[in-house]
Length: 290
Ligand code: MN
Image 1 (cartoon, helix red, strand yellow):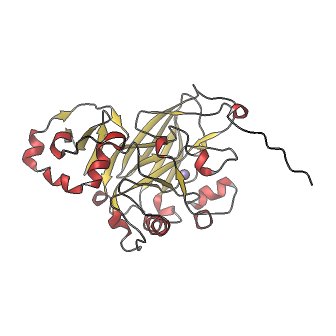
Image 2 (tube, protein in one colour; image 1 turned 60 degrees about the horizontal axis):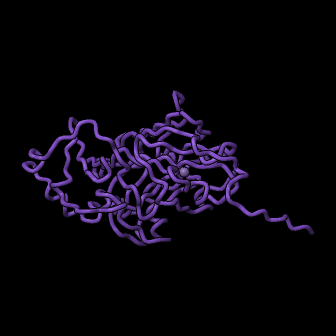
Image 3 (cartoon, protein in one colour; image 1 turned 180 degrees about the horizontal axis):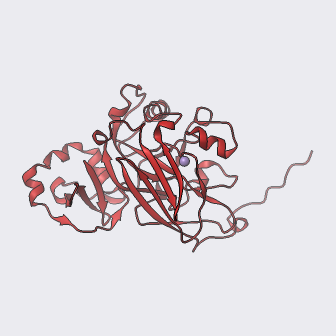
């Protein structure tokens, strides 16, 4: 099953040849900032109302304006340095085994067709195309064998990252830095999340072309490890890490991520609000002298 959110609060079931507006069939009610898909993930029994007769009578949607499927996830968990070839290009030998995980702000999410706002005129900001895992139920200390049972589905994600000196959680949490979508495919449609071709284009340039088979921590291992640290909640997003080929973004460029079986996500880049790095809010700290 493939599900999407459009016009902020409408739920679509995406079939091979049409988009069905199921908002009124599943009765998720008013959902606020988290949106209707979050409500559906939290109440999976609602999907049982989608019988064939109900679906036949539901309205069809033409060319919807997609919103982020989960505009405000409970958590966005990131996997740093989870592909060896990306570790090599970054010039630091540590991998996810040494770094562990990081968190991105939930307020950084945008949907397909959105605009990534570059924060600075003079600091590099990169694209990182990634497979995103959407958690389906509360989970703690999940075993490797049970890990995929807690997955609701998968989608495409861009982990936009500024290459400054700050902590990862700062560099990756600017508003608009987590494009997510376009739609979410449920886990039954992806038999092996560790064997998917992932490609990312910036403009006409194919920058990233790899398989999730090259991940150091597999999807199962990411879930087992993350849940050994923190309770996973329905709607949590795990950004599984990026393969080699990250590079700087320029205003006006289009960025596209496409993942086999999962889908496609496209955004644009703007520097309309970018400022010089030195003019950000800050305090000068004198370097201690010996
Ligand atoms: Mn990343």
